[in-house]
Image (tube, rainbow, N blue to C red):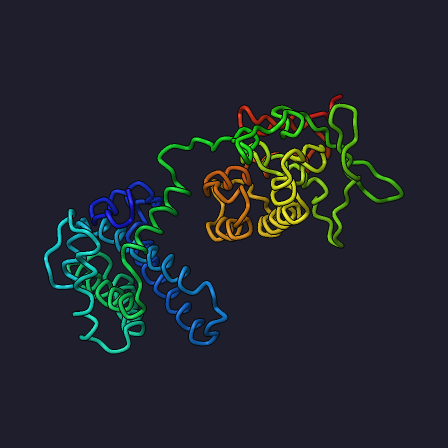
Length: 382
């Protein structure tokens, strides 16, 4: 369903499906979300005024943050046991139903903008009143009216910035489906997709579907290295942490294995295993070449620095901003079509195995593209 066809009720269903708020704290989180997202939007407006044309991502960021703000208004309506359509009706003074489209809501916005001064400052003021009221009184009869006032001011601010409600809602829904899909079905492996001009990738240029790697930490002249083997053959150079404060980054090739197994993508492993797609120069140069390798190594370093010191131990998810940054890194490459949930799984599974390697200092890590997973096997008793 396209963004233009979304109505209020359908957006509410998406909010319900992706709502992860604990019931005991749902109202507080919704109000914090409204306040926080409005603050983010105001910060974006400030940056655009300050930086002007150099802030090239302004429009895209504004649309994303606006969709997130509307999600939290929907979550707030749920906490107040009222349909989101009632909140929109209270905001603009017209009757909407769950079947009303966002184009219908948008048509009313020029009228409400005339009623207030600076729209962004007014929106911030109303969100502050909402948060202050909840802090003092909790859930009472006045809360719905305050929520309607905050939504009204936010809609006026959207209109002043020429933000399309349909675009904001559409972006939020797309993002939600990428992060929290209805079905988590992996994409077809890149090696199994049609090659340029309708050809197929030769078997000896594909990432192996099943491959065991052995990681062993060795010490030479008081310096620790990690040596990797596939069967009995060493691959790559012995790795150190390459940093003054040792942090076990020398085991980081396990992340490339996770990307290969779960996403079907790893220019780094293609180079190590000599399975670049040489038969198709457009793939060899643009997807498997040096720039793609640097991007993958950059992602590994970025995530690693974010993950320290706990390395996602006990985590059930990855911060959305980190996932969004990764998507920006890979824009223009084949892996850009991977949904957020697949990146999240690749990161978490990679760090599950990394923590085991960091504890035992050696082990066998098996990459299985058929199962789209990697597994760890202890070698300490061998």
